[in-house]
Every structure is written in C-alpha cells, then in structure tokens.
Length: 388
Image (cartoon, rainbow, N blue to C red; front, side):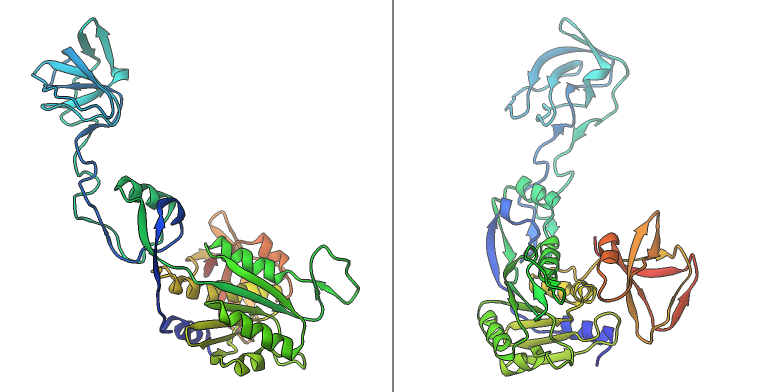
C-alpha cells in the first residue's frame, strides 16, 4: 500500500512518449500546443481606431471634415492640423492623427466637426504592437487551448496548429450483478452506471472513450477483454473486480497480460483498492467498483495522467482552500476525499459519504480533503479539489 503523495508521484514520474499532430483551428479546442508560439507580426499591425468616431489632427474643439475611412480601407489621407476624418472601429488611422473622438461626443455642421470637449493625445487609438510585438512569446509549449486562445491564434493568421495528440481511452466494467440501464432489473441486480459516469468525466475534461465494454466476473473473459483492449488503447480504465474478493479477477488478469504493477492500494478513503500499471507504452488504471470511489479515483489520479499524456502543463483538478461552513470530524484512520459543495465562498461537507453513494457527489462540486482522524471547526480552511 502507498500513500496518496507516493501514488501521485509514481504517476507523475512515468516516462512517456508524446505524439504530435496538426489540427485545424476549429478542431484544436482543449489540445495542448507542442511548441512555443511566437507572434509573426505586431498585433495590432497598424494604429487603428478603437471606436466609431472622428480622427482629428491637433487639440481643438472644431475641425474641418476631409474624408471618411472604413475598416479595411487603404486610405492615403494625411491629416493637417485642424482637419478630421470620419472613421470606424478597426480602421487604420490616417497619418498625423492626434486622437479619435467617439461620435457620441461630436456634432456635425456641414463639413465642420464640433466636439463637446477637447481630445486627449492618443485617446481611442489602438497602437501598433500594443497587444503583442513581433516575435514576442504568445503561448508556451504545453498551453491548453481555450476559446479565447483559438481567437488569438486565428488573429495571428494560423489556420492550423501543431498540438500533442490525446490518448486513446478504453473502458471496461466488471460484475455479474450489473445490467444495462433501460432493461428490466431483477431484485439482485444493479444498473451499471460507472461506465457512463467515467466516460462523461473524461468528456467533461476534453477526452473521449473510444470503446466501453461490460464483462461478467469470469477470469478468462476478463483476461481476454483486457488483452483485446490493450491492443488498441493508450489508457485502459477498469472499474470493479480489483479488490480481494473471490470474484475479483482483474489484478490477476492484468498480470497474465504482462501489465507491470506500479502500485496497488492507496492509503485513502474512499478508493483504497486502486491499481496502476503499465505494459510498454500502454497504461492501466483499475478503479474500485463503488460509484463514488470510482469517480473520486478518476478525478485525483486518472485525470492528471491523461493531462500528462496530452502534453499539458496543467496536471489535476484546480485546488483551493475554503472556510468550512460547519464543524466536521474525519473519524476514519485514513485521509479522506469528502464529497462537498462550495457556495457563498465556503464549503459544506455533504451527507452520504459512503463509497457506494453517488447522489451527494452529483449534488456537490468539490472533493474536500481531510487527514485521518482530524477534527475541524467552522471557519477553518480546508483544501478542496474542484470537480465542476
């Protein structure tokens, strides 16, 4: 058995091979860039108007209007003192422009422009290179692309970008008692939900399960299912069958498939029977079958590894400390990840902490961490992992 910190370190220290690919601008959201991006030109690449109004030359309250410039126009106008041009947002300001005055603060009388107030030097002008100068670092290698990032990359003229490929993920759930949702259920059966929860958790963070498979508690079937999945996946996630019961065949099936154990069992609650292994460049997480345990282990251990395999510099959930909304005591002898809800700048540890109970996780938005046999008072800060 290993500690939480040791398990996370083992995962973090795995040697991996990152693969790259070129993806078009509209298909790179959530991917991490494989090399630094430098600005290919100044941004903006010319002085331009920040709003609709009038470009003026000199500081005054009256000017003579000598023309108009729309966005995209290639104008040769050179303003002289006392002259102004009608100008629109994004249009290149003419030579000798002192300032741009927004149209709401102007009046036009024939070809005369009258201002409500004198302009200030440089107002309402976006200067060349104001946001980015040519060759300046835009994004460092490992930056995970956001919608705003796509906007900036597109604004720099890139139609596609080189990114790290995301891992191929397969998912196997095991258990004789499990049946597919929608089918008639016998009294002794349970609707299988872990595969849906885990696949959705992957999708929530930008990953996709290539295939899902449900296998009964049969050693040869589990062994065969693992063998076939390992042939076509980078990360295999299993749920159930990893404890020490008479029908828990997953660990032995992994060993007979040549998977090398990196750690087995973590000193924590929930999710003690957690397994992590590898076979060459294939990796396996065997998670407990209880729903809350399975999801908790995904958030704390699987997610940061998927991010590592994707070349991201961000590893794991966002972590913050919040004041506790009430007194609480972790009476167990193991550190605990507690289903919790953050609201109004404080955190509430929810009822229903059993590893089989997922309703409290569905109503919450965080996992609160507390050391073994630790009591905390209302207002004490407690570390939280944000799951949504």
